[in-house]
Image (cartoon, rainbow, N blue to C red):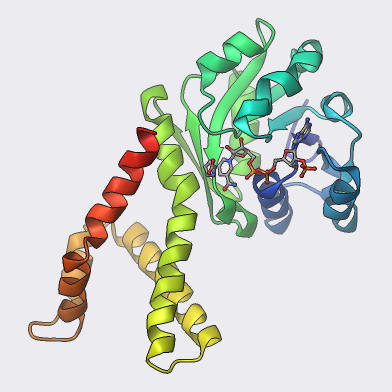
Length: 265
Ligand SMILES: NC(=O)C1=CN([C@@H]2O[C@H](COP(=O)(O)OP(=O)(O)OC[C@H]3O[C@@H](n4cnc5c(N)ncnc54)[C@H](OP(=O)(O)O)[C@@H]3O)[C@@H](O)[C@H]2O)C=CC1
Ligand SMILES: O=C(O)[C@@H]1CCC=N1
């Protein structure tokens, strides 16, 4: 029987997202390095990204699928169909987990052989430090046991969140693109502090910990973000001066418009 101790995970595509997932699974001890293999386009780069951590590089998608019980599809969305076409029969026996944005259950039904057990997800890069999110489409064809195994293994490194098909795209955008926006926020806040004389490394450290702490506080308390903001804004104090300036520059509407632009691109 498949369990966390013996499941073999194969990544088809081993770029930023797949490496973050592998790193996270190892960091939290969800699986051992010898349980993970991967393929990519450039062999030398793949070897450099796998062998030092004890992961096994595979020559191609067929070798990866043959060597794995759970296959993670982690190539760019436009490559999914052509990369999977030659290994459709092999994948019938596997648990297929897609991390490609914009590739819901229905698209895989057109690509994979009938009866293949597959799940569409959108993860994010903080999984590499065990703080990820994996938005998962609730419509999938994994058995209960396969879903439980996926949740057990990947749930150690990420919040595994089921969402309706209609919400997979926006949940994936929030979770998957969000780290880029958060990183921009950290960088910009630090730039402001550097301008005022704070050393850059210290500015990044403080900005990042402030983000982590604020997120944890919201998760732990369930507080409304507006109430959290109010709790920091003393009447006539410093924070409200900054809040007013951010409002003048359209801070909140910029983020709202960013999600709108992505979803309607
Ligand atoms: N980056 C992110 O934060 C997120 C990404 N995703 C999804 O993850 C997927 C991968 O994105 P990301 O990791 O950023 O992209 P990368 O470009 O970093 O990685 C893509 C990987 O695919 C490999 N590849 C290309 N062609 C083939 C092929 N024919 N066979 C096998 N492997 C191949 C590349 O190999 P090589 O390096 O040798 O060219 C590379 O390892 C996308 O579908 C994206 O939508 C989802 C959520 C967040
Ligand atoms: O930008 C992208 O296309 C991918 C999908 C979600 C995050 N990164």
